[in-house]
Image (tube, rainbow, N blue to C red; front, side, top):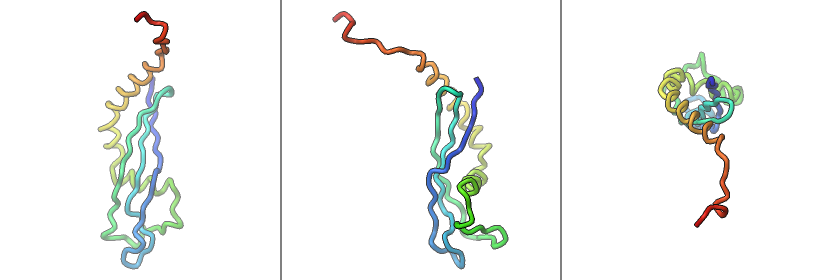
Length: 114
């Protein structure tokens, strides 16, 4: 079964001011979700974005940022392809265990001999 990967923005924290800029995104909490269509396995990440040297040509104010844009900033900063390659084997093994577990059925322990 193939594994799909998705991302979710969990939280965004801003600095009220950095130099002449206001509401500068400084910390992004996000999630990577690995799924095989039956089960999912996830990791939570926290990304501290650099704010030491803001480029006025590329700065976007918080009011103009979308959830997706904030998530993309964090993914780019963390080199998401590298992060995925480090995590994928572990998550796929976890998905295999979780999916096998869905095949189990409960046993009424009261019906078992003492």
